[in-house]
Image (cartoon, helix red, strand yellow):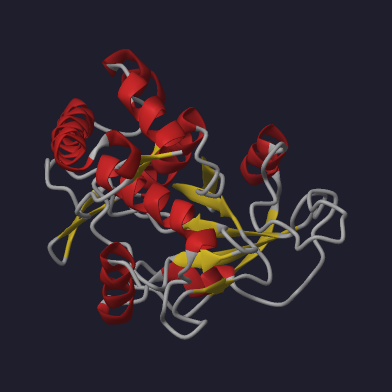
Length: 274
């Protein structure tokens, strides 16, 4: 196993589990979003249906909320009257602020999804802002029948088929300053597919990189390099302060320095992987 896979496996085994178990439940069929084929169905059922999913999250009536009983941020499951696309959402009304030494905000959940869309990462489930019972929060699609790394034994899948997803996850976490990636908030889809959840502690005002960079995915890295401050202001501005956006730019600069240093040492082909 390579050093970066050992690193993430250890991190996942020792980190506290938060809300990923809220996304795993029975194997209810989700129509019409899931592809019909003999190949394993993708866990990212929202791809190609983002506008439909966002509208349903924002407008569908919530019949009742159910305490899930797991996760330090106390997420709830919201059951929807209409199941035209999916029948439940994850409800996280976490007001922006510091709790137990951590910055937390429901707005960070939405920012992570919006940045995922901008980067065409397709790993972060849809999240929108809405009100339920007079309270504002993030409504996130509830994914059915998907287990987290923790629920699957605590080890991140390894091998060539998973390498790209792991590189992309680590690069995204570095960019958004997510200090809380652990085995409970990495969901395992079909071979090579990881779904990233629980970003309420991301977008801190710090230039620290949560992961040490060893390799980056060429397509994703190119899109990250192309980001402008205007892009980030447009996509992230509704959800966070200018200081938090400054920190994204600062982390991108640190990432660029690290990647350039690795390229100088090892050659581009071994660092920026197609």
